[in-house]
Length: 282
Ligand code: 48N
Image (cartoon, rainbow, N blue to C red; front, side, top):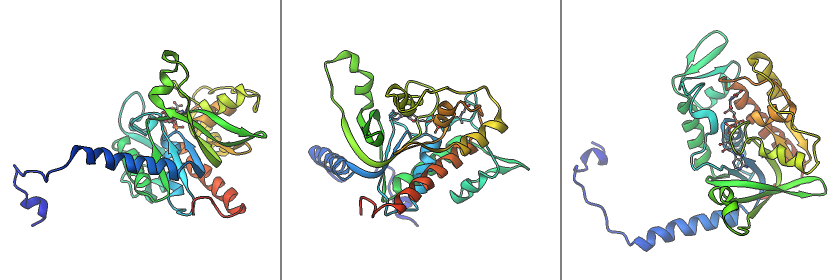
């Protein structure tokens, strides 16, 4: 019989010093911030595209990755399917990505259906968080970019609640994370939608952000994956931020393009890094 099975219902806890709880959290979090002040890759946004990119990087332990998410709960739009219905539709061949994650689904001829979108998001999130080289900083927003000679060289961060409260206080300055490559997966709606490419347009580094086209599932998913690319030196766009940046159609509640776009963004970054000198973060 397992130790848990033998545990009495009214078990009592081992004693603890309250200050030790604070010390444990503080030492680890501060060490993470010191260790990840300079990385190979920053991923902005932990929705399905950003998480898929992060998962791909877990296969490259030599590459140091910071995953930044404004919400306390990562996952973006991938906790539900469409109109808050919870099953998730993923068109083939993106089911192969689910196979890699060992996620169960119902199979149809051209697509698969997960009984709950949370099955994807919780599974991929657990694998990303458990990895040795990808560090998730949630409740943290990217407020700006580090730009050197027209190249994205990292991100400017703040607590997400501070970012939302800038109008209430005098200047609450941010922190920075330097990175060789920034993957922008900021999605398409909400207060943070497509913030990476919108900032590039504000800086005149890209002409404009045309925004989403109307819905056409078959056109949208192929186009988003095809246009997942380096938009300016140092920044790769992925997920629905691609649709915003290039004005492709939107796909609505099918998620296969998010998985394969995120995977493609990570592989493009790995190819760039392998072509360069030894990666940061050995
Ligand atoms: O889920 P999203 O919004 O974005 P994607 O591209 O990962 O997935 C898109 C998908 O959820 C859909 O919208 C589906 C396919 N619908 C399509 C359609 O046609 O309607 O996740 C983006 C994440 C969110 O969690 C944001 O909180 C976060 O990125 N985020 C940021 N985090 C930190 N700093 C920022 N500046 C920032 N901007 C966005």
